[in-house]
Image (tube, rainbow over all chains, first blue to last red; front, side):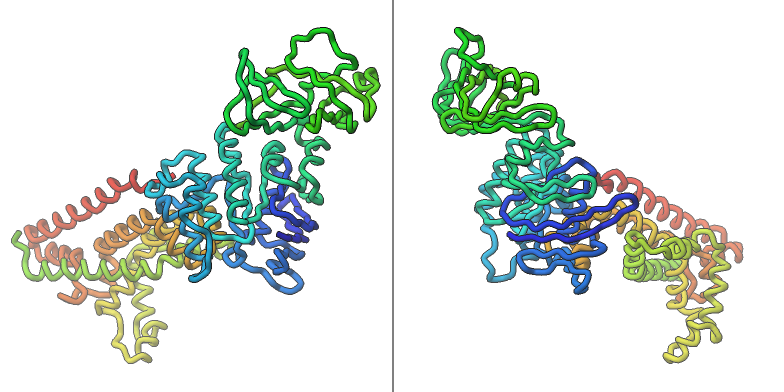
Amino acid sequence: MKLTIQARKSFNNFTLSADVALSGERIGIFGPSGGGKSTLVRLIAGLETPESGEICLDGDVLFSRSRRINLPPEKRRIAIVFQDARLFPHLNVHSNLLYGCKRCVKKGEAGIDFARLVTTLQLEELLERGVENLSGGQKQRVALGRAILANPRLLLMDEPLSALDDTLRFQIIPYLRSVSEEFGIPYLFISHSLLEMRLMTDQAMAVEGGKVSAPQAIEALARSRVVWDRSDYVNLLKLRDGEAGDGLYAYPFGAGRIYLWEGGAGEVLFELAAREIMLLRGKPEAISARNLLPCTIVDIFDQQNRIGVELDYGGARLIATVVRQAAAELQLKVGETVYAVIKASAFRRIY
Amino acid sequence: MGLSSSDIEAIWLTIRLASVVTLILLLVGTPIAWWLARTPSRCKGMIGAVVALPLVLPPSVLGFYLLLAMGPHGPVGQLTRSLGVEALPFTFWGLVLASVFYSLPFMIQPLQNAFEAIGDRPLEAAATLGASPLDAFFTVAVPLARPGFLTASILTFAHTVGEFGVVLMIGGNIPGVTRVASVQIYDHVEAMEYASAHRLSAIMLIFSFLVLLALYAKRPSGRRD
């Protein structure tokens, strides 16, 4: 998917200006609330008209002030999953799902396999129900299904998870990703959560104060520790084949194993805050923390008032953050070996 | 019930008039209400005020102006004459036209409120799913505004049934043509036929009460979140 946006849009005391070229299948729009993310989405979908500029999707002009082109939203084939789901209350789940499909997929065109989508989103049981009494997570799954069935050229997900609680949020993420991959529909994912961004996208552009920056790799964005997101860098660890024993779970990781309080069957995702990793110069005699990993330093970078240290442990990467003073005392250098100390309780399970 | 044939004729005429007016106003009022609910235009306030005028204007004033307009020298009168149609005053269709104006706010205001309550959100969702504005209007806005349509139709019907002043100004009192129930009651009273007036009045009272009961009993279930 290739999308170029050169556009300006002003409201009372806010101006959004964008000049970016996007190329990829899973792209994030990341930034604080009120920074212009939703406006950008509405310009792309055609729900707002820019004052000037040009918007093109895969070579087709959606909007051009100079050429007097402005495709209405219903002709753009860009579907949106809204934050508030926006299901039609007078239709049941089945009719909601088919609303866009009837209008966007021409007769004879292949379109999306309804049965397969319903199975993927686990909506079989809900089809005949009204939408008013569905839970938040169910509503978003129906909204996602409805958007996918319209077989759009591009799917915009505008903070689709922010109305949901944490548990539900991370249950939905695999659906969002797998559905778009399975049916080959590229998406723009909008969120103010860096964690969601990292789980959903490969690259993201930051939108803040009406300014849209060029997209960068999501990992780089996470490391640069953007100003509005005060949280520390978080390591995301996808682990599998855990074994329980002695009240801990052991997972294969890098050159050895790591020990955690929690665990589960199949693939499990954990987060580990970078500041929870302690760095030692020499090997201690004995230590209460369950994880003592000899690592090689592969990168040292600035993280505002702290230092980020990227560690390699037999191919597995971790990032630790330390204050400047500690970094100076430890005399950290790329290529040297340090011991990373991590308590078994420091890992937090996401799903 | 002891109704005379002229009473029954008057009731039947009233029902016919109210039904025709409600149907016409559904067709004419819906687009106006939709426009009023969604336009950013500055004319909105002006048009809204004009639509609301019959709420406060004495029926005789409205009737007087309509009579002038429909008369041989009025714009409507000249139009009907050029079309070769008989003059509208003192005819059933003259009453219909007058009642459409008289009951306009009772159709438009509930509809406008219903459309405003729907807001942009469901319509934007429909647009991104490929629905043209007209398609979204019929498949999303109209079904969602159903309670509003019901309220507006009932109010319009009931209000047309209850009109008196405008009918007298435009239609006079021609049996079977313009003598509706309210005028018939007036006639009974004028002729000191109090028993007949009672019977017809009681029917009107019960009818009005039932209409309002239906309307208010409907309210809670008509609300959406």
